[in-house]
Image (cartoon, rainbow, N blue to C red; front, top):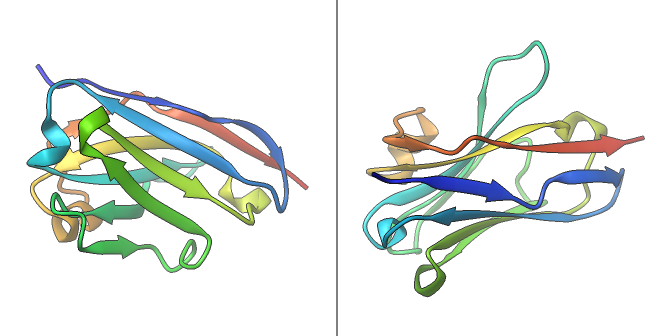
Length: 123
């Protein structure tokens, strides 16, 4: 059974940075696309970023383009979301996911989900 475990969340001031990690069981990221989503209180879950299994294709939500970078290390079975220039509106629970392709993930088509990690950005 595939498990995705996020870490790296926390409290940061606006303008700061955080790097989220997503550790996967097995070599899933060698065969699956990986994605990040977030859900703020009272709001629906929204797509943030996705990366193809090859690592060559990326998709980003307009709200994070130029600030967030998705990456992965297949040898470590770990995906990352580097978040820079954080804003209070980035506050949310961030979820890692794996799916068949980055375009599908951008349409919320995920096969596996993590449990989430809280990111709080103070003004």
